[in-house]
Length: 485
Image 1 (spheres, helix red, strand yellow):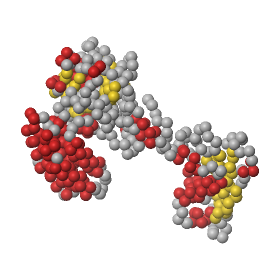
Image 2 (cartoon, helix red, strand yellow; image 1 turned 90 degrees about the horizontal axis):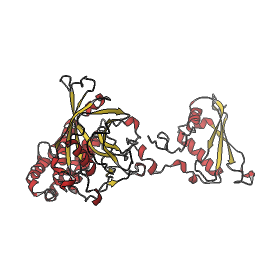
Image 3 (cartoon, one colour; image 1 turned 90 degrees about the vertical axis):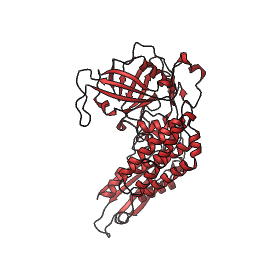
Image 4 (cartoon, one colour; image 1 turned 120 degrees about the vertical axis):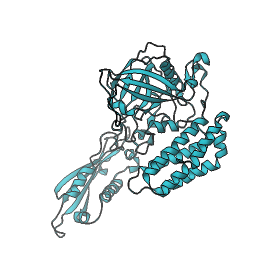
């Protein structure tokens, strides 16, 4: 597993976290009389810098009159002998400050550090601007960015993946922002939420003709019904606005979920097929031109039972529902859907490894070694045979960093291809990810769907449990086989 090169605690340090702050902090916090040496050594390779050393001698007196001076000794030392020919440039600069002024006043630790840096700037022949370890390139910080916004549920990821009308996407973005605002503890920004809903309502009303025109004629009547429900239905935007004005967070949460579900239904009507043309060389593969649903029935390999549902009894079998997203991964979902219809996974064993539940590799059925297929965010078609560079800011439309993501394993022959048969459920764990919540394997596998029902049984699945059956319960009409092309 790959790890980022920078420290998540001290991202500006290229090697080990600096110990500069600790001796100085304790020197300021406790009465002592000692000497402390601090060293500033730039970490930039292949350059010539001076190494600046500071020696501090602290003493805290019992009274103002007997206060001993705070002594600062600055020494500069050439890092390479050839760099400074005249060693007279390196000299001691004694400076006396009154320690009691620092301790008894309200000066914060930052002020003292600022004084040290100013003195270093004055005494060093080179400017501090050359010390590039104070900053970190954004490309190397993506895995550690707490501001990174990835969908945290399969439902949200699937909704964002729908290639729908721009007005509907604007409504969706405005409503999804409320989801983040609801997470703010205590005093919630209801005024901002109200503004978001009003914005969504205005877009819906002003763009009604455009929204309905994007729906195929044979589905327009259903679309019109959904549109009315979105605007002023029981779980629509008007009702959501009232809940926000009443400042009822529970009703807001329920109303928001209802509105977003309606938005997703409308968007699916607007996207009856692929929004891009597949490369000609890939038309020989099965492909899924939209969404499909697969149900997998799991049974315990040792004859034991699954934990009961709320108020229920122990279960000999449990069902997992997976939504396949052909909009973002048409080849991968097409191959998987075909294998399901062929019964390739019926009776196959599962294994638990690391953060995944993986299927057997050999199904005995004919599968296709599909090229690695990943749709980058902001793009309109997938990339093939290439991974994404997350550290360069590339993120997929279908992220792996979601609990219950479904992806194909790599081919045993080449990582540019997915396995013809072997898939896995990803058990995302934020504790094993960067501070931005991004898995270290992000952008390396063909993710093609998410578990939308049955996620709660994943922790109960053990090595040796069996897929009793796998069925394509919805979307058979969107599965295009090579002979049907």
